[in-house]
Length: 430
Ligand code: C2E
Ligand code: SIN
Ligand code: SIN
Ligand code: FE
Ligand code: FE
Image (cartoon, rainbow, N blue to C red; front, side, top):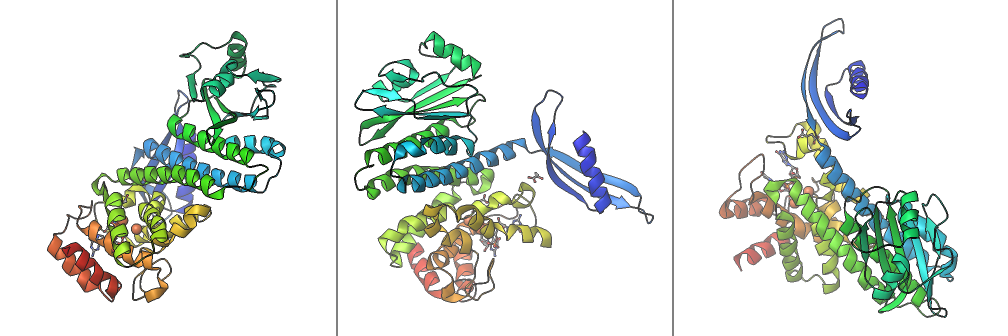
């Protein structure tokens, strides 16, 4: 309550209408996010005469956004690790740094990396991060010994609810987990070309919100380390390591695009549909095969910048005010800011960043004109408009096929690239 009052006081002082998002702590200690909207009327002497408004619990949305943000951070982390491994000759030297990178930035609690020593056929403790005390496995673990030893023997992930384990745990290990206050545990084998390179362990003191996604992340990291280890004295097989990483990334991107559509039920399936149509159009317009993958990623992520647009605007049933439009028009720039430092998404940025540019230069965010607009974005713009108009929106009903095609033809040469419109009409008629 105190936080609410402070906020209100600050707002009155600034003489603004209320429109804020902020966290509150309930009596039982749980945190909830609140969105407060209201109007304040002042008398001539500056006193408040009336305040009217509403508050809404937006915790679910905030949590979904936090998860997406975390996934983005993890994706960036995989990239940082990749770069670090590429310029390292002695893996051993950077293991402590690696353990910290894996855990710290990505919101995890404690990490242990245990490389497998082929000469003594044991796991050794390479490095740890985040523990209260010195970890147990000071010496080394034989295959089958302890939790990590079991993972190394069976080459399978172990995921444990520590209070309710589905396998037996050694007494000293139980005590260690208790002292470390660990409630959830994941261990993943480090594998490269099917060979054991070691084990990565995650120890959580707070329950994971997305255990499957976290397991995938740890597995991706483990794979990177194993690959680096394998190739330490050989020439790196870049292609191979890239392929595995790309597959993990693409699964993540697909997950985001689903999450974005879910935010607005009425556009469900929009992202998948526009991605498929864009790929067809791009092929039809002679875009080289190796660029198609970037175009598909770009289409899947085209409106990721709308994550920065509040529900009150995105889901508004009526026309937007000038201020609301200003916020809405920032979504391509948000996308650029979110994605541009992920190296492998950089070639996919054309669509998220430029899909609202117009052929005659009156679009946003940069007002690019004609062929200054990347071709992928010119193609995508037609398809986005087609699918948007063919669907119900909170502020209008879906348009008919004929009306939509007519509208698109009218936009040819002003909003849209005429060549793209011609190809699009052909494609729809096919
Ligand atoms: P969106 O719904 O994904 O629409 C993508 C693009 O399709 C729009 O870009 C626009 O070029 C076209 N389009 C969509 N609906 C209509 C329509 O009813 N009439 C016409 N003539 N064209 C349409 P634009 O205009 O830059 O809008 C970007 C985003 O802003 C939209 O994405 C939507 O999320 C939001 N938006 C646009 N207008 C409104 C509105 O009146 N109310 C609300 N609440 N949101 C709006
Ligand atoms: C959304 O509004 O959440 C995405 C759907 C779209 O691209 O219009
Ligand atoms: C918000 O998402 O900003 C608040 C929820 C709403 O007003 O729809
Ligand atoms: Fe958009
Ligand atoms: Fe769209």
